[in-house]
Length: 144
Image (cartoon, rainbow, N blue to C red; front, side, top):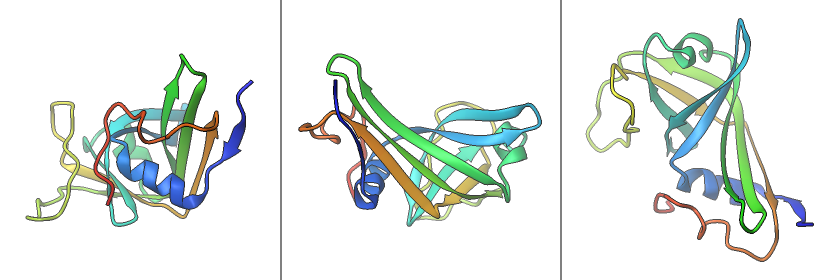
């Protein structure tokens, strides 16, 4: 059976910065929701473009939320997961600023609203030992 181990903060941050797809986890009147999104990390903040009327824009502002990224290799029974936690900030009608990185939404439609999560907690776990967590990522950004 593979070993489960905690990742240190530096490993968590590196994986978070390299991945491109994750989930915003927030509370709604119907209970917890996990919303799949693409994202970027700007400084020490997860940034997601979203619609002004969607779940994220309606329920994340000023609320404790989580953001989760992961990778699972079912063949070798190994994988990792990183969770960032903090207060969500929703910013409407975000202007494009030349030179400032911005997420490029995959889905069509009005994505003029940004969710920003300046994390206050970053944790992660890994299953399996002796493998390169980043080398197995299907898509990844250059480390910064």
